Image (cartoon, rainbow, N blue to C red; front, side, top):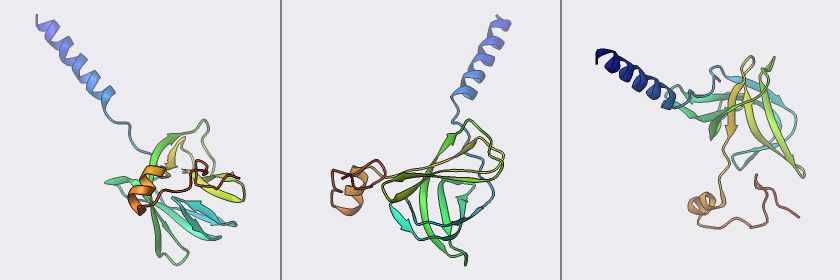
Amino acid sequence: MRRLSIFALISVAALLVAAAPRAHAVIADPIRADIHHSFVVANTTLPPGVYTFRIQSPMNQQVMVVSNARGSKILMFLVTPTIDSHRPQHSELIFKREGRTQYLTKIYQSGFKQGDSVVYPSREQVWLHTGHWPPTNTGQYGEQQG
């Protein structure tokens, strides 16, 4: 009976560990990037320039902050964890091109497969925020199709 109790306790502990939420991305240090083209992040277009990307705080790892070269915070956006198949030698920003627009989609810190994916709002979220429906002929990242 005692052996069964210990086995049950170990089984419950293993289930709790397996059911625990996955740890968030390992982007612990700010990532500085000199971006030579305009780009969209979270439905905001930023001009070419030097930017710093960092997680808002250890307690809120779902929000990333973008600062300009002077250190002024210019944008906050939501991210979710992602995993890539390779470990980058240097920190990487991944862009998706749609037409003439480049969308920031993922951010990886050097040496880690884990990173962050940028969360882009759905049509419903845009409607809730603005009170207006975005055009129905938009791509996944907001680009007008045409």
